[in-house]
Image (cartoon, rainbow, N blue to C red; front, top):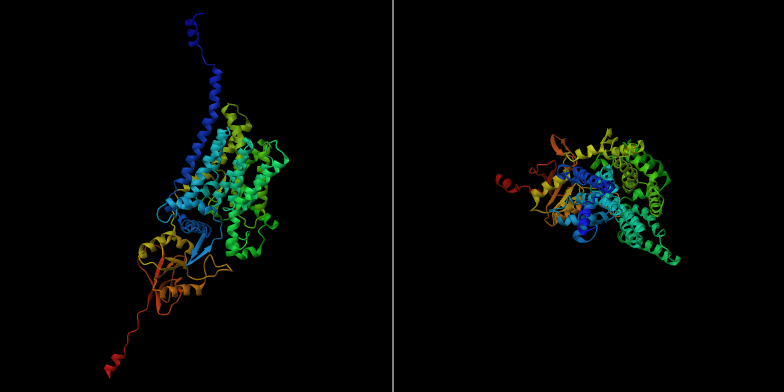
Length: 576
């Protein structure tokens, strides 16, 4: 054969059709996974990112006092380096740990004016990172289809959508736990102890967000199960080091408690609401029945209580289809080192939460997020079967359950809750809800009128909220003892303290104002009077005058000096 013949024969060689078909089949899961991930991002944009917060009541930072204190702490850390709240002239500890407020600081630096959107932008960012990170995690381990399905399951989970819109710390706590589990999985799979040490750091730091996340610490048993042939001594050293790293990362939480409250296990709740600590133990078997009833009402779509989820969403945390899909995932689990660690941590956390005295579904959010890893398993199998054109009753049934989980049907929405709702539909239409932030509008109107005359402001609006938003040197304080901070045994603010605060301001010629919002005008002695006016301090020689320059529902009053009585004595002498 000549060289020309070889060239001619080489030019006629073709690629085997089976190789082309195999290549296309292998690319289908990747393309489908990317498509699901894009769908998840689009849904997240429609349900969370496009909300116009100025058209909602979110800027009042409900629920009280959680969101208000988070926001106040973040501003205090940024400006003064300490996680405090301000009432009057006093800087006081918060009842909540400072982890979530620290996460707000980047947004506080870049947002204009008072940064009121920082809590919401922080959670929106965490939500986007959680979606992207979930997809990238599965992509890195060679399961892009599972990554897309996981992103879609997370994005359409009601708890995720609700708290991505919120000003609460629950989303960040759940995200930290997901990150810790991912690091442990990669550490065991790639045989990198460093990743497990990183997971220990993440778990330790999570206590500064939600202290009860300490019950996820059994995840670190993964270090004891690490696949390596080493001596018993070296194995024991690594186990001890993992615990030490976790303790070191968690130490800021306990150190701060010691500095502020005198004991590493005492928190702001003992300072502000000691009656709750006195009445009941934090953990008790008596709490199991109501906790079990709460869980059952969530997984069967039969809840009927108003919760924080109603403030930022439909009120639903999970839908029955998602729970059923997660239960199916148990059949696909192979018990290996990671699975042992993960199930141990999850079981311990659930057992501790079930015995916890505070009965709220949001404490289970980390578990809801972790269940996505289970729900993905049957969905990935069924979709792979469909992509290979192999259909069975089981595969079609799993895909149907997956679809129901994504659209959130059947479920409940609103309060009072209505059944037969579709969570995806309600989430997309929730962004168009109109509303007003009365607190925010009232303080904004007050600043517009009195910006150039700073002084003391007595208000029925949360003083920690006002002291962040009002420009310095304005100082806000409650009207009397009717406020959120009136249960402490170590700090007190009542009628006498309000009078003293106003008297000190008057003595220094400082303007004194009242900003009233909660009550309505009522008729008294033939006059229309705001019923909270009678709560204002009475200072001899001064009286409260209502301002007519406000265009909001708020009532603004100014303390002015009474005019001196005219001296009529000369007139009497002239008449004589």
